[in-house]
Length: 434
Image 1 (spheres, rainbow, N blue to C red):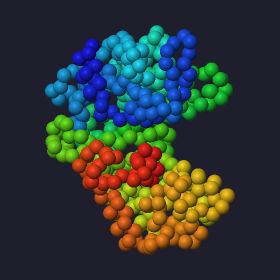
Image 2: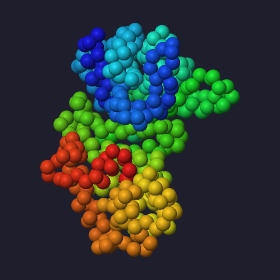
Image 3: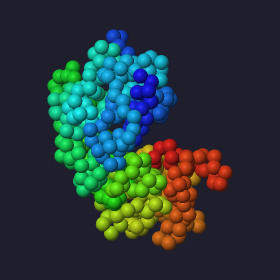
Image 4: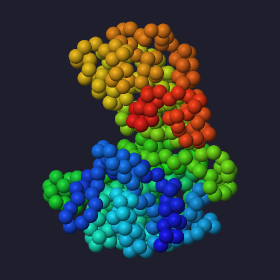
C-alpha cells in the first residue's frame, strides 16, 4: 500500500488543483467531514485554518501514449493501481489522522475511459455511502466517458474537471493522438448542462441532489507546443463563456520525458509565461477585460518584463490619466495598481471627501504603478510625467528582478539580500490584485 501511495501521489503532482473548493457543507451526526468554500490545497481558509487534499491517481497504468506525459504507456516507469477499497480506506485513515480534509482524485486511462471512471465511481460510492464521508472531493472526468457515469460522479463530487491538455487541436493530434478534441469538450458541455439543470431543480425541489455544486475547471499545458499567448488567452476566454468554468489552470511544460515533437530535455519550464497567463486570466475574470484587448495578432505574446495590465495601459495612454475622484468603477479597474477591492474602497471613501495620494496609499493602492496613470482632483504626483517613454522605463526597471527570478525559476523570497521587498510587493503576491 505504501509503495502504491508513493508512486501514485508522485504521479499526480502534475495535475494543477490549487483552487478554492467553492463548496460549503456542514458536518452531520451520521458521518465525518465537511466542506468549506475557502478551503484550498495547501493554503488557508478565511478563518485561518491551513488545509490540504490527498492528491492521488487511481492508477498510472495508462493505455494512451501522450508524448508529454510521464505515465504514457511507452515510458519505463513503475506502475501501480489502487483498488477502490484501498483508496477509500486510505482517504478515511488520512482524514482521521488530520492529514487531509478532502480528496483530489484523477487517473491514467486504464483499459478504457468507462472502465477507469467505474473504478473512480466505486471509490466515491464507498466514501459517501459506506464511510459517510462528507468532506470535499474533486474528481477528474476522463474524456470519452459515458454520460451515465459522468452523471453518477457529478452527484457524489463537489467539483469536476476535464483537462483540455493542449491549446490547439493540431497540438493534440501531434502529441496526444489517442485523444480527440470532441471527447474533451463533450463532457465539459454535459457537466455544464447538468449544473444548469440542477440549479432549476433546486429551485423547485429543496432536497434535490446537488450536481457538482462547486462547478468545473480545466487545465492546459503551456510550452509543449508553439501556440502563442494570444491563442491561449482567446481559448481561455471562450471556455469561460461557453462552459461556465470556475477556473482555467495553466501548467508550464516540464521536460521530464524525451519525445521527437517535444522541447529538448533540460529546457527550462516557461514559468514566467505561466505567471503572465495567470495575471491575464485574472483580468478576464475580475477586471472586465476581453482577450482581444490584452493581446492581438500583431502582438501575440506577453511582454515578459511587465504584467499584462501595465502593458495594456502603456499601449493605451489615451485613456489616462484617470482622476480618482471622478472616475467610475470600470475606469478605476483599468489603472495598474488599483485592484477590485481598492476600486470599491475608493468609490466608498470619496463620498466622505476628496482623496489625495496619501489617502490612496492608506486604502491599499499600489502607487508604485498607479502614480503614472492617475491624478487626484487634476493634480499628478510630484515629479511624475505621464508620458509613454518615462512610464515604460520606470515600470521596466521595477520588473526586471521579477522576470529574472521567474526565468531562472528560483523560489520567491521575501528576504532576498539583493533586493528590498516592499509591502506593496507582498500585497500583490498574496492577493493577486494588479
